[in-house]
Image (cartoon, rainbow, N blue to C red):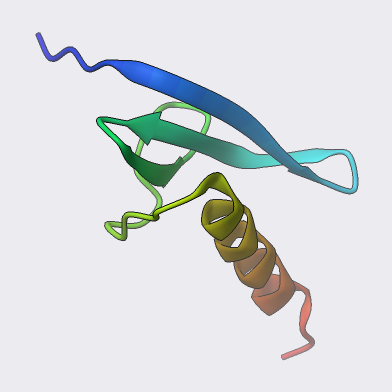
Length: 65
């Protein structure tokens, strides 16, 4: 069993759709899906950096191919 101290969690939405979670674990922020799987190995200093990462990822998907 794995445990961690969860300091803060934010649900990230865009246009009413849930994109994932911004979670602070042990002083670093990460991006996770709704099942708790990491979406990137990158760690962020602030929640705002995670939100910007989600925005850039969503914008990439919105671009026409």
